[in-house]
Image (cartoon, rainbow, N blue to C red; front, top):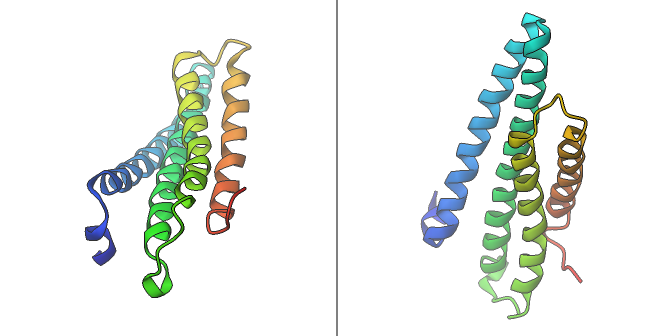
Length: 145
């Protein structure tokens, strides 16, 4: 809580939005699971769509975590030593990809019906976004480039 108050307003908003997105993803997963248990063919397509939307919302929440952790690590080093000025460019590169891919996958999952053959594109972009988010979380504390 003490570090949260020291963050700029924008980063605080990103942190709160990440929590809200994680909660929304959890609710959608529960609803999709309940729809799958009904075993009606019409609800199975909708349940898979809700699961993909929930997955993308969860990855957006993860991208928010990447932004907040990257910012706090950039400005709160052990010993309170400032980082070099060129370090923020590497953080921007590490944050741009994990945030953009889940957002585009979420847009495709919302607007493309699951009955179309191109719906696999939304699933494929979601898989790529999950890999990118995992890579950004793993490499976050290491210098990039």
